Amino acid sequence: MPTPRINMRKLKDALRLKLVGGQSHQQIASALGIAKGSVTKYCALAATAGLDWSAIEAMSETDLEHRLFGASLVANYARPDYGRMHQELRRKGVTVMLLWQEYSAQVSDEHCESSPRKALRYSQFSENYRQFAKRLKRSMRQTHRAGEKMFIDYAGPTIALMEHGVEVGRANIFVAAMAASGYSFALATPRQTAADWLNGTACALTFFGGVPQLIIPDNPRALVTQANRYEPLLSDSVMDFARHYGCSVLPARAYHPQDKAKVELSVLLVERWILACLRHQRFASVQEVNDAMAPLLTRLNNKLFQKLPGSRASAFAQLDAPALSPLPTQPWEWASFKTVRVHIDSHIEFEGHRYSVPHALVGLALELRITAHAVEVLHRGERVASHMRCAHKGGYTTTVEHLPLAHQAHAQWTPQRLIAWGERIGVACAGVVYPRCPPVSELLSHPIL
Image (cartoon, rainbow, N blue to C red):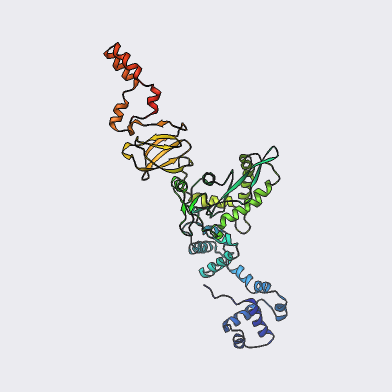
């Protein structure tokens, strides 16, 4: 790191003692606690700039610094693009040293008689970038790797849903933001249940066109079954969501908003640039809210940064988009989980309906994965049965192969087969068999024990 320059107040004192007091360089150095060489250097710079004490005294510290150092620095050294550099550092594997090497090579290639500018040394290059980063907002100074994290949260304000002039509900605003680029997504949901959180996250991943390594929510009760500062316990539905997309869900620490500063900023921007613009409109449904937010969201993402080059949309295209994992081929479907025990008839019960499982599992506790259309039965994480979901209470859904062999053989004797067997013996036998055969529907609705 280069030797830090003394502050301008002390530099002014040194020039005053030299130009007004006529003291020697050694005396000035001793009086101000600086090196004699520094006194010589600054006095020479003032002489080169043609400054006397009257001119120096009238200058502000900023103007004096520019006269002594600014012109020569701009004239002799190529200025790096620190804004672009800040963006590049978000890419995986990119370091300050690598960027300095590229900068030096570019300056060397451009060096010619008409442009004799030199490249900064690495120490000055890195120090200048550090000072640049310090001037950015705290949330902007965090260096997130491209495609690594997506933050999710809900905005505080909600939007009223009106019907015939009467409020019938509120639309909650789900917000997601990519960490590296700040590219944002917003979606209105009817509530903030676990299904709403995960459906919003799935829509965000579709909007971004890929999957990051980490999804970072707050610590919502809808997703976290057991709060913990270091290892919160997520619900089975959340873990199933993460397995489907091949990513990890890592809640931020409770009461530590700095852990998710990126989404806090995105929530603030959504409130200012989207919700505030909709405050005079009236909506009857969540879908109407989403339709109204879509163009405003595009405008927000295309809005230019104040201190960095480009916009959230352009930064996303350059940084996050290439680093995201592809979306699964099958769409995600909400699933809930429940533990059940297998009955003696090789069936489990869910919502009053019974579904068959392999008879070898009788008496064991199994896990159900329930979606809108299917009931899957899991044993130690492996699927052992799957059925279409049925709302018929008291009914049975049976796969014959799940029953013991003896029961399967017995089940083959259907009413039609019994009657045909009796008819082959004779008419009198058929007359005895037919009245004693139960209806086909009754046999199909109850398994053979």
